[in-house]
Amino acid sequence: MAAPMERILIVGTGLLGASTGLALREAGFSGKIFGWDKDLGQLRVAIERGAVTEAISDAGQALAAAGDADLVLLCGPVYSILDWMQSLAGQLRAGQLVTDVGSTKAQITAAAEALFVSPQRATFLPGHPMAGREMSGAAAADVALFRGAAWIFTATPQLLPTTEQQDLALAWRQWVGRMGAIAIDLDPVVHDQQLAWTSHLPQFLATALAAELQSRLDPDPAHGQIGGRALREMTRLGSSPFSMWRDIAATNTDAIAAALLALEQRLAHIRENLRTPELREEFERANRFRSRL
Amino acid sequence: MAAPMERILIVGTGLLGASTGLALREAGFSGKIFGWDKDLGQLRVAIERGAVTEAISDAGQALAAAGDADLVLLCGPVYSILDWMQSLAGQLRAGQLVTDVGSTKAQITAAAEALFVSPQRATFLPGHPMAGREMSGAAAADVALFRGAAWIFTATPQLLPTTEQQDLALAWRQWVGRMGAIAIDLDPVVHDQQLAWTSHLPQFLATALAAELQSRLDPDPAHGQIGGRALREMTRLGSSPFSMWRDIAATNTDAIAAALLALEQRLAHIRENLRTPELREEFERANRFRSRL
Image 1: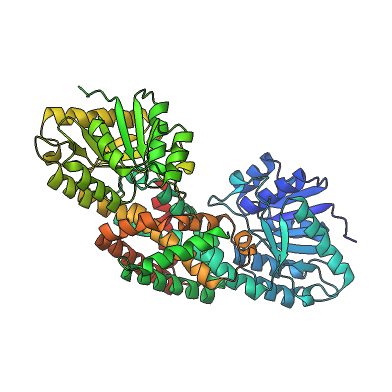
Image 2: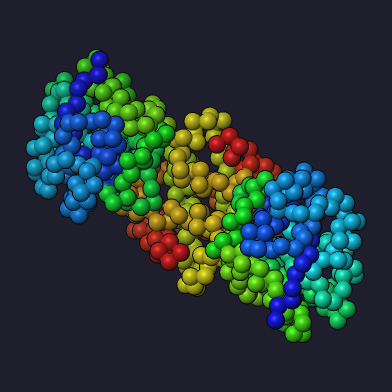
C-alpha cells in the first residue's frame, strides 16, 4: 500500500520544480508544498504561480524543512542534486522519501547507494521526467509539462530492499501517474547510454548548428526568415542553458563523445556521397526511423 | 503597371503547387487555374481541394495549355523544373511569364538566361518561397503556407531588360504579397550559398541523426517517448522526400559539402571539450544566435 504524502519539499523551483508543483496541485495534491531556490526571483515566481505554498528563502531552513517532509524532490543541474544528496543524507530518517529529476542517472544512483542505503536513513528513488523546454525558470513552468511524457526511474534493488521502502516509492510513482506521466524503469547505466543518443546528441547537434551559424553568418535578421521553419526548429535547443548541460556533459562524457563521433562519421559519409546513390539510402533510413517514431 | 493575370498553369500540383493554388484563390484570384501533375493522384487531390480549377492529365496538353497561360508556375524537384524550362522555352511567346519555386537557384537562373533571353520569348522570373513541410503532396497543401514567409527572387538584369518584362514580374510579385509572403531579392549564387547553411545543412543534420538512430537503436517504440520532444523535433525533417533533396544535393554540392565539413569540425571540437570551459563558449554562441532569430 502506498504511503500517504502530506508535506512535500521542492528543492529548486525552476522549470521542472515549479511544473511539478503545479501538476501536483492540478492532480489533487492538497498537502503543503514547501519550496526553496537559491535564486529568490525563481522562488517568488513559483509562489505567485501557485506551484509552491510555502516559500523557504534560506538553505539552512530548507534543510530543516526537509526533516519534516514526507517527500523531498531535488531539481536542478546534476551536480547541485549530488550536493543536496550529501547534505540531506545524514539529516533525514527512515520513512522519508527523497527523489530527483536529474538528467543523468548513473552518478546519482551510485551516490544514492553510497549515501541512502541504511535502515536509519531515508529512501532514495532516482527519477528523470522526459520533459523539458528550451526555456528555463519558474516563469516557463507548465502544468501540462508531464502529460503523456515518460518519467524514468532507475532504482536498483539495493535502494528499495524493504516493503516499506517500496511503498514509499510507490506513493511517488502514483503521483507521477496522476500528473499524466508514464513511469518507466531502466537501469541507470542503460539510461545514460540511451539518453546520450536520444537526448544529449540532439542537444549538442542543435548547439553546434546554432554556434556554427553564429560564427558564420552576418547578423542580419533576414536570415531567420530565409532559413524558415527548418532553421528555427533545428536550432531551437540552442537556447538551452549551459548550467544544465555542463553537468550532463561532465557526468555522461564517454557516451556523449561516442554518439558525437558516430554523427561526425555519418555526416562525412553523407558529404562524400552527395551525388551518389548512397544518399538515397541515408534518406530511406531516416524516413524509416521517422515512420516508427 | 502590373500586367493583368487571368490564366495560370501550375506544373506540378504537389505541396507547393497546390498550396499556391489555394493561397491564390484565398487572396482573391478569380481567373482559371490549370493544373498538371505526372501523378494523377496528386492532381485529383488538388482538384478536390480546390487548388486547381481545370485538371490536365497529359503532359502534351499541359504544354498546349502553357501556350494560353498568362503565368506558368513550375513546381517540383529542381531537375524537373529544368526539364520543363527546356520544353517550354520554344513554345511560349513574349508577354507570358514563367516562374518557379525551385529549391536551388544558380542552375535554374543560368538556364533561364540561356533559354528565355530573347525578345520573342516568354519572361522567366526565378523564385523560391521559403516555406515547406516535411510532408509532401497535395494532401499536405496549406492555404496559409506562405503567410509571413520570405519568397526569394533571383532575377538577374539580363532576365528583365524591358519595362514590359518588369511589369510581368511585378504582377507575380504582387500576388506573392497578397498570399502573405515577403518578396526578397538575392543573387542566385548568394542564395545557394546562404541556403546551404540555413536550409540544406539543417536538413542533412536531421537526416544524419535519424539515419544514425535507425541504425543504432533497437526498434522499440518506447524510444520516441524516452527521447521526448527534442528527439522528435530534431529528426522531424528526416521524413523529407529524397526526390526533392537529391536534386538539391546535386545542384548545390560544393556549398553543402563545405557546410557539412564545418559542422563535422565543430562537433569534433565540442566532443573534445565536453569537460572544458570551451563548452560554455559553444553554448553562449548558440544562445546568442537564438536570441536574434
